[in-house]
Amino acid sequence: MNELEKGLAIAAPAEVQEESLPRFLAQIGDWEIALPEVTPLVLDFGLQEFSRTGLIEYWIANEMEAGYCAKYLFVFDGQSCPMHHHKVKHETFFVVRGELDVLYDGARHRLRPGDVLPIEAGRVHGFTGVGPALLLEVSKPCVIEDNYFENTRIPIGGNYRPDA
Picture 1 (cartoon, one colour):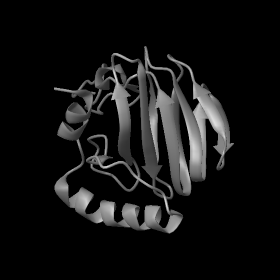
Picture 2 (cartoon, one colour):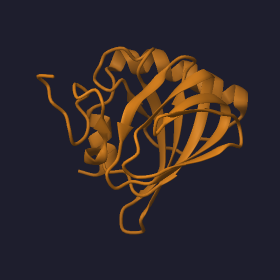
Picture 3 (cartoon, one colour):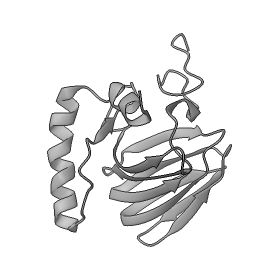
């Protein structure tokens, strides 16, 4: 199973996707952004609170052998990608549209269109949309097990503990 298939296996429930994807696509249409023809990954991180904790990913490439990944990450206003780190993956965020509050390695950053923020492996980070926001992530390949969330109830990655 490839990494996108693993991600899709832990996607948000169908009703969340049916409600959120049209709103997302309307926003992308307003911004006149082109998307790759792939199945979107709608994540609620297993917490069933998509409007607060979630995001939508469009994977452009995840080239394991070539050593790179690129994907769009979208959050609605006030929606957050929870605090986490990667042991292997180094990633760079580029804000395409909107604004983000990013907490990275204990420091808060406000990112706006055109801003770039490299995220080193091992550094804790998370972000929240200030209004709807779209960023491009360019990184080492995405490996689902290389996500380590501070909230260990999140059933994704290497430190999931359902009893936490």
